[in-house]
Image 1 (cartoon, helix red, strand yellow):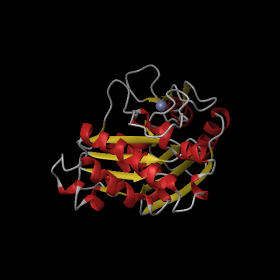
Image 2: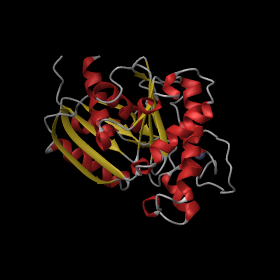
Image 3: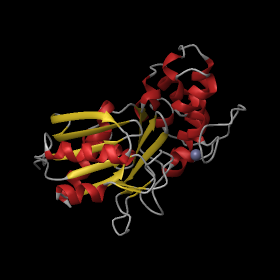
Image 4: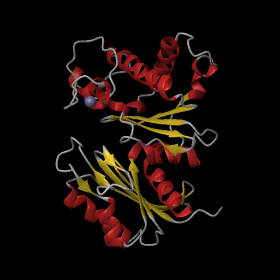
Length: 294
Ligand code: ZN
C-alpha cells in the first residue's frame, strides 16, 4: 500500500503542530506555533495548508479535548467543554474542511497518537493499545481492534479518581483531586512550588508521582486490558521516572493478573513512544490516511 501525502494538525494545550507527510520517514515539512485563541490559531493552520502544506490530499486533526468526534453529530469537529480559555464549543474541523475544500478527519490528540504508534511505532504488533500522555494534563487514547474507542463521548481517563495519599487539593478546575488534578505537570508544579523540570531526581515528588501514575495505569489495565501501554508527555521526559512507574505498576498488580507483562516483562509493556514527540502530529496524518482508505 502506498501511503498518501496527508496533512496532520496536532492542537495541543500549549503548542499547535502542522505537518505534511506520508509517514515518519517522509515528513516533508513541519511547523510549530503556540496555541493561542481560536481566532489566531485556526487561521494559521489554514495558512499552512494554503502554503507549505498545500499538497495534502486530506487533513487529520488530533485535538485536545473533550471534543465531539461523532460524524453524525451536528457539532462534529468541535472542541466542547474544555477548560482552556476561549476554546469552549469551538468548531475546528468544519472550518478547515470548508476553507480548504479537503476531506478532514478529527479525533482527540491522544487517539491520534495511539493510531500513529499503532501504524508506525511501538504498537504495530498489537490491536489493543493505550497511549497515555502525562504533561500539562493527563490523557489517554485507547484502541480496541486497532480502532479508537468511542461511545457516549470518548474516554477521558485523566479525570478518573485514584486513591490519594496526600492532602493536596488538586488542580483540576472541575474535580480538584482527580488523576490529572494530582499527577499532571501542573499539579506537580502547584504541589511543590517548582516546575517538574526544576525538581532534582532525588526529590520526593518523583516517588509520589510514580505511585499516582501506577495507580491510574493499573485501573486502565484492569478495565481495558491493553496489550501495550505507550506513555509519553513532558513529565515522562524525567529519565528515572519510567522505571519507578513500572516497578510500582508491577507491585500494585500484586500478581493478580497473572502475566509476565506486569512482571518480568514490564519493561516491554509500559514503553515510551517510538515516534517520540512527533506521535501526535503523525497520528493526525494517520487519521487522514485512514479516512482516504475507508
Ligand atoms: Zn478532573
